[in-house]
Length: 215
Image (cartoon, rainbow, N blue to C red; front, side, top):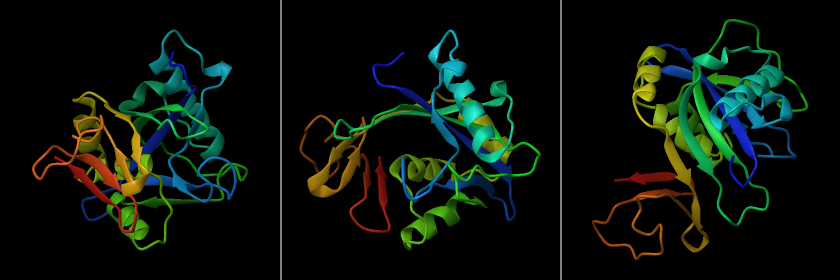
């Protein structure tokens, strides 16, 4: 297990219209973690989730939290690992969060109001567009995940592609002066100076719309 607490997030996807998938986003209350933000279902690992290894533990937590928050029940074995997020040192509350993707199950969506005050099924492109206009509050892990899902026209295409590659690890560093979130692979990640053609893996968060550089 990592030195900081573990949490898990589940990105539920379903086939939408016009050749694009839809994801489930929940709006958090104006308090607690991600106040007022739109996020995927999830939360921290509890003792009931504990298993022999961290990934299985995180799967259990993702499924349990999703059922508690939305009443949608997913088989833990159907989850496909997408990414791991390690927060920047500056944050007072830190979680090492596993992100998984799974096909949305049948069933009626029922929200636990203490955890989510609203919900929407939305195409990733539409969510990012609404965020860019200031209509939908997102946080970097959700924003980057939505951007990652943009190319996929169907759930089958998304799950096949994601299952065929290693989960991306995002150990975030912040550059407050330039309003950047920076990840490994960026030439400034370990304190280097920017060059004109240097590698980039960063999110510009100083003004809307945010801008992702990854080259």
